[in-house]
Image 1: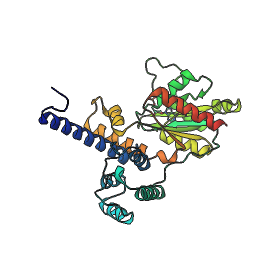
Image 2: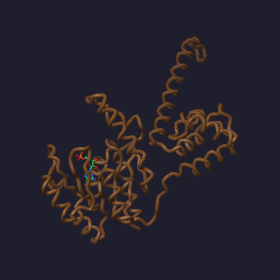
Image 3: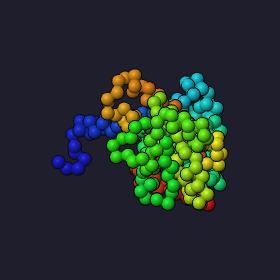
Image 4: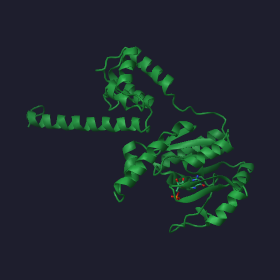
Length: 302
Ligand code: 5GP
């Protein structure tokens, strides 16, 4: 059959499939905004760069209500203030509307800004299942000059884990002693089960020797390090999308509904903490994310 003579129903089916796919990817993007995987500014930048992208074809009304704390009433007031018609799509905004929307977002929802002159003590944290351990392992492999802190833990070793390499495996009494003797820079109970803590001495020695030190710890630990060492550089590892994190968290489907919802609630709360961090790195690909963390460590060391 000659070009352009396909039966119309084939075109209709193809068009409706395309429309369904576009709606799905807009819905996924809205979840990313709501769950704070993507900042509103990031989505707006994508929309302005490409009006045909899922960000570009998103209605301004959908975009605004996807932002936590913006309901329909507030949304309508914002649109009226910015003189933007509610039928507009992000990619279809005029130059003045684009500028005003960005200014409004920057004023109300400031994005985390990278602070300069941080120390060589780096903390890598992020939501559960984002892949912190894998990124840290990659750095261990490719950058042996970076001192990766070895934590103490009360959990049992998993197959293949070595004492002093992956963790120092200690019992509760020894963990209590380490706390009492001030040997831990930070410590926390993770997932309501076992305790994990960062031994202070090896870090001090590595820093004194001019090395970069990387801690791969949970959010509670990251906050304690910030309090104890305000100059530490805090890096937040993000999933590429909210849906991807959900897949990694509950994808296997082996948990019951209560456990599923507990994990998702935790992830949502953890993602909301990213504003406390100096830098954000997206873990779409382990090697790239590891390289970005190393780059940030080099920038901090200058
Ligand atoms: P896993 O048991 O799977 O090795 O680690 C569980 C969690 O404990 C991970 O989220 C990891 O980041 C966290 N973790 C490991 N070591 C420490 C530590 O020294 N301090 C804190 N606060 N969290 C840690």
